[in-house]
Length: 377
Ligand code: SF4
Image (cartoon, rainbow, N blue to C red; front, side, top):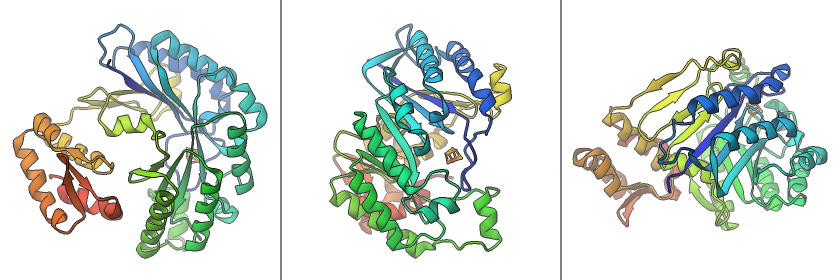
């Protein structure tokens, strides 16, 4: 059966974190109008997903942001009611809510009962208060720990947390402390990203003003290696460059992105993919609320599709199926890929197993370099 994913962007944050350039607004007064605007886009876009059925089947729904946990239970119910009106959900659908630890009070979690959310992804980033304060997070370590424990006590058995590496002031010792705390919480999934700053975000300006110093390549590499060693030693599968899961708890929604499956994105700045082409809404909440999505689209040519395949699949444990590469993009690009990979295979950074070209997880720290080398200009 053909199934797809639905991404719902919730473009509200109480305040902006210093490193973030995702599209979101501190516009609490507009949240009430948002579920109806989402439903308008659902109705308009329900046939975007390739589906033999009148109502597309969704295997995953992901509410990301922004801060989806700023939606009240009533607003979330309105969103899910709309989803049920326009789509079918598979019986085992994975339904994720991204949440800020500060929002996960006992009352809030209790109010979610009856909603179909079965996975919560909590943006924690660090368990060190000084690091959290510097990057402008609104929670501290204690509240983050309490939020996770509260979710567990409420019966959520598919929890993910986000961590960050190379934060201002972060040392190997403090990163180890954050890792120990994460492991102690026993969540099912951990995502961990190296801090990366777009020009213009407050932390980037602070860096230029000399208010903090970057971690440097040696420390960043050491943190990434420690992350891999400690989490895999504790039973997590390192299944994507930045993602770790207990067996059976990979993010199905994100895995579908990485496998090139179709998804529909709703909300300002949300991207969609129909299996061939991409489109996206403008990052403009005011226009979106008027039903003006200001869409743009991209129809990638063969080379661009090859580059995307290399960029996304080589970040995953399963790598690239060489048969699929040949069948979808042609023998010439298959051969070009293998020719470029040869030196990395000889250097033992990559290998071919069961017809798949894979970057060895020990070499994921240099995956950007390998991927750049395999991409075509
Ligand atoms: S809460 Fe998330 S989306 Fe909002 S500003 Fe912070 S990092 Fe960005």
